[in-house]
Each structure stands twice: as structure tokens, then as C-alpha cells.
Length: 502
Image (cartoon, rainbow, N blue to C red; front, side, top):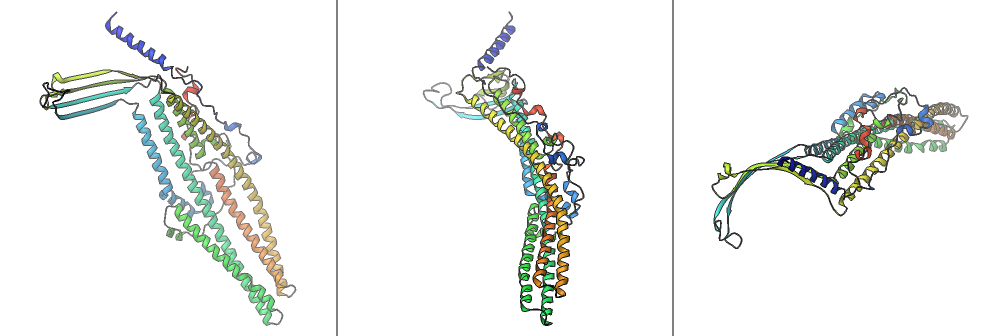
């Protein structure tokens, strides 16, 4: 038998023995338990089933359905200047950099090292009194080293894939932050629109109350009125002025809030004009809810990438149970003594090459603990994903129920305003003709303004609920291609039999 063949068999036999010994550290009994929900199995309620199915998924600029150029410009400014989005963007860059560092472990590693040292040797029981005792020499070395991990069990590959999945998760979470910012701006803008409408009603109320006071005073001067009527007409005016002042305060505060959401100082809000919102599109659903929901909502997509990352974490932990083989090589020069550059001569040249094998035999349960932690973290991520999916479908149903109710309320509120307006006009005409007292007019007027306020609140609710529905559908920020593939959501050792698992 040739020497090379003999050495090869020895290496192969050693590797087989090491692999068998690795079974001493067992993975038995440690595996993920959670399973993923299939969106198609989630029952839908009557609200989802009855919704218009021709609406399609929201566009990225979903707020444009309100037809307000000022809102469009304000959100564009916020997306460019928001500190919260800048923070999310920085987290993406950080995660991508870490992914690059993890991926680098799969590539060959080359290192060079040069040492030039002047060494003074002592005279003592260890060094002397030999030739080096009490001398000073050059101890120099130059080495070029190469190492390459064979990654037989995919540990490094799984680790780099885990890091990439974390980066994709960070990108999806940035979309969550962006959608939340857009939603907060729209909600605040809708509230600002409502407060302007309430302010108009307040001014109208004050004007009519002042007119009623003047009428009561004229009736008193004409001898057909009383001081009590004049006093009654004076009572509501201060309270109405207080409400007007409160609304002006609320408008100023919402301008400040919009400025902060846009990443600007409070002074920027002063340039905001009165909102001009109108809802041009009816509420509806795409045809593939809930089947495509998992690929459209940023929070669901982020949860899926978290599951994919932790699935790779399980693979990394399991690969630690098996032998690790690295190829190592180095060439260089080294010398103790002689001239400063003498170590670079041919006689000082050396090299080394060969495999380096490490394997666990007994670690006191460390590897089992790490695998158990990874499996539990994966199960927690799957449970969180399932809950996020359930909450997403519930959110859509909630907004459809609210939208249907708001539509109904808008019809009833308009009817109430019409009836209250007719009642007020009749009461006012009767009072002017001396057929009734001022109290009836005051009650009719109060009822009218209350119904007008209700109508404006219902209109604002319809705008806000429409926004909430578009947000619940994902806001158009995620493309189906941004999702992990279904097979990436489970550890490889769950999908296929592990190489050794005894």
C-alpha cells in the first residue's frame, strides 16, 4: 500500500470516528413545536364577505384619495425629514452591515503578519549560561496565512442567511414605521379639518346668539319683551366664546403636532391652511383577502422575516453539534538571532498546511441549552406571526364594520340637521311674531348646532375610518416579492432529516 493512500485512509477513518463521537452530544428531544397559520383557513365574517371586491390593494400614496394637495405635500416633507424614519433607515444599514460581516465568514480568510523584535536575553537558570545568555538578538517573523471553513453542516451559511433575514426584517419594520407616520399625519389632518368645521359652527352659533340678544333688547325697548328674556339671551354667549377659544387652541396644538410629525419646528405649522378633504373612493376590499394579506401588511411581513431569521438560528445551533473542519495553510520566514533582515533568507523559509478539526464530546449541556433556546425563540416568533396575522384580519373587519356604520350615521345625521334647521326657523319666526317665548327658540337653536356638530364628526369619522382601512390593508408599501419564501419559514432540520441526530 502506497504511503499517500495509507495517509488518506487514516484521515478518512479519523473523520468517520470524529463524526461518530459527535453523537455523544445528542440533540434528541429538542425541536420546534409551533406551526404556521394558513390565512386561507381563517374564517371571515359578514363584513369582509359583503365588502366590495373590486377596490384592489392600496397604492403607495394611499392618502391621495382625499384629493388635498396640502396633505400630499406635508406627507412628502415628513417622509424626507422625519427623525423616526431616519432612525429606521439607520437600523437597516446596521443590519445590512452585520449581514455582510456574517457572510464574510464563508469566504477564505487571508492574513499577513510581520514582526521585527529586538530581544535581550537574560542570564538565569532557564536561558543561561548558554550561547544566548546576556546577548541581544533580532527575533523576526513574516507569515502569510490562509484559512477556509469547509462548513460541512452549513453553520456559516445558515448564520449569514440569518443575518440577511434580520436585515430584511429591519426593512419591513421601517415600512411599519413609515406607515404609522403616514397614518398619524392623516388622522391628525382629519382632526384638524373637523376642528375647523366645529369652529365655523361655533362662530355661527355666536352670531345667532348675538342676533337673538339684539332682538330681545329691541323687544324690551318696544315694550313687548322682558328683562328675563334679555338675561336668557345673554347667558350662552360667554360659553360659546369659551368653546371657540378652546377650538382655536386645539387647532394650534394640532398644527404643532403635524410640524413635529414632519420633523420640523412648531413654526412650520403656521403655514398650514384649512384642510380641503374629500373622499372620492368608496371603501372596498381586494379580491384576495385574506390569502394575500400575509404579503401586504408590513407588520406581517416583518414577522415572517423574524420567523425566517430564527429558523436559521435553529440550524446554526444544531450545526454546532457536528465536527467543524477548517483548511489551514501558512508560509513565511522566521529566525531567532542574526541580522535584522537575515530571517528573509531561503534557509529561514517555512510552511504548514492541513485540516483543523474540532468537535464537541462533552460540554456539560451547553450545546443542548443553546439549541433549546433557539427552538423556543423560533416557536415564540411563529406564535407572534400567527397572532399578527389574526390581528390583521380582525383589523380589516373592524374598519369595514366602522365604515358601514359611518355611512349609515352620515345619512341619519343629514336628516337630523334638516329637521333641526326647519324646527329652528319655525321657532324663530314664532318668537318674532310674539307667538312663543325665547326659551323655545334657544332650545331649537341648541338642537340645530348639536346636530350640525354631529354631522361634522360623522364626516370626519368616515375620513378617518377610510384611512384606517387602507392602513389595515398594508398601505401599498410592501410588494409580494419582499416576502420570504414559504420554505424559509422552517429550519432545514425540520424540513429534512438531519445528518446525525441520535
